[in-house]
Length: 308
Image 1 (cartoon, helix red, strand yellow):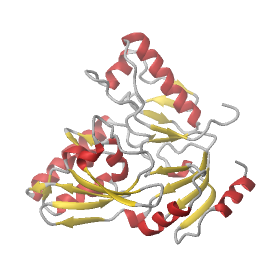
Image 2 (image 1 turned 135 degrees about the vertical axis):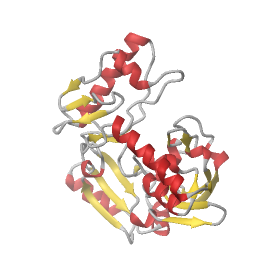
Image 3 (image 1 turned 90 degrees about the horizontal axis):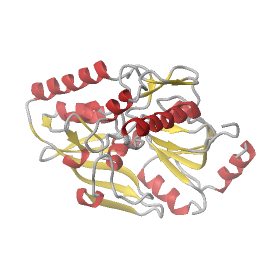
Image 4 (image 1 turned 60 degrees about the vertical axis):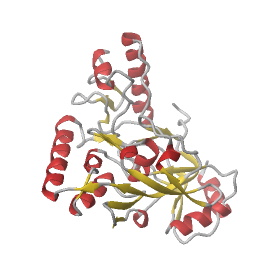
């Protein structure tokens, strides 16, 4: 859409208490720091604001939900319709009885691990190794270092496209590796997680071990997007990529990390097309050398630029 069209879309949307921004930068919201703008960006004030907006928003207007952008690639042509990004109101973490806690969908996974540790709740340390937010972890069964969301989730609240607020149990997600079977129209707002009693010192020591391993093995100080490909059954993606000779491979301003070759890096001037094209080249080479088809773990949204 042109700027005029974005402004026209803005005028079609319901009144909200949060923020509505036309032609909003998406590159600034992702860890890759690439991508075209959203026609309109909506930051709801709270769950009631989100629910009312969805209930009144015309059904023919596309809606896309994003988190903190840690595992997201926005294409250079930008995102049509409305992009919803949950803010600080949805990032609270509350300790409950019975070694449980409630975390908002916008809460960083690391924040959840730290809050649990401070309360003497064990079993959630693995979240210290996931570079994202709880909303993404709920949808993708986020996990690391031997733990997964399906191991600790009790229930989660979400808002349907109709505006209805619903609660799902762990079983409703039908979790598998980095996947859930929840409907695409659900926007998750928070979840309740079950831990167990633990010694604060032991929990924190475990978290330190997890974060040190991550810092030593992953290019977290670069413009990257987390694990690029899911691990195929019986394989590790990085080994397949390495075996295909792709470690350090470049395209434009994009590079396969030499530290951990299941990570793509924006070396400074990459376009989204460089990163996605490089990822597809890696998939092709891995298929040719090993016969294995790698599946993207990074979520890719938006449209290609006209010159791509």
